[in-house]
Image (cartoon, rainbow, N blue to C red; front, side):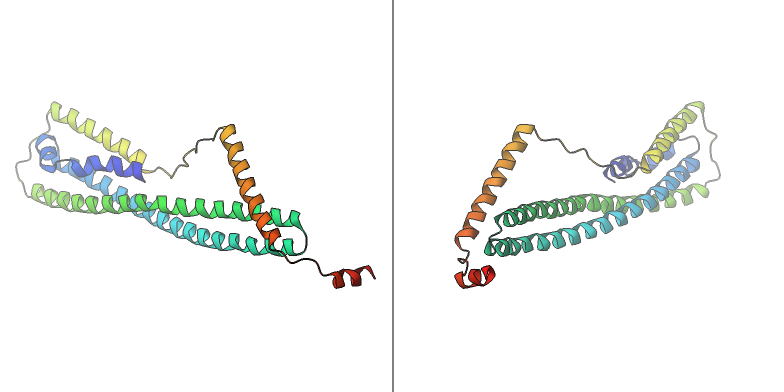
Length: 223
């Protein structure tokens, strides 16, 4: 979406009067620009709607994952109460993994905000440009003395059309995933050690607060 916005800025910043004065066939040039703007508006509206739906899904997933992650703390406490330290440790590790997923989903949703804002801004600019071009075409239609295009003007028109064609090809892009950098093995190992230390500390705290096993309950089991 951002790539489309950057390319479209060339059209938005173009000077209509300058194009008309230098083009051999000004009305043809303006119609080409008008058509390109309309096609790009359709693509941008579609991309913006897609980004909004994706953002809503990510925000919902982040909330759901965060709530589910915190349930593992209670499960770890239950495991400790029953003397299952292995289950408690696994529960706490699962909680941390779910928290990380929730954070990733929230970050992805936030990253879409700028793309949506950029698309909205470009759409407004293109709408204004389309209106200006439509008005200029109407003025030229009333002119009776349209000049024939000169070779130099033809060359300029060809260059402009080539640029528009290139923009049209780029406008059909899909959101591409950005390759995330792979962390160094040493950093990853140290991070795992830090996570393990935090889990062990919380596990020790849970064990310290766990009630002692009932001797009466133990005797009934042995009988």
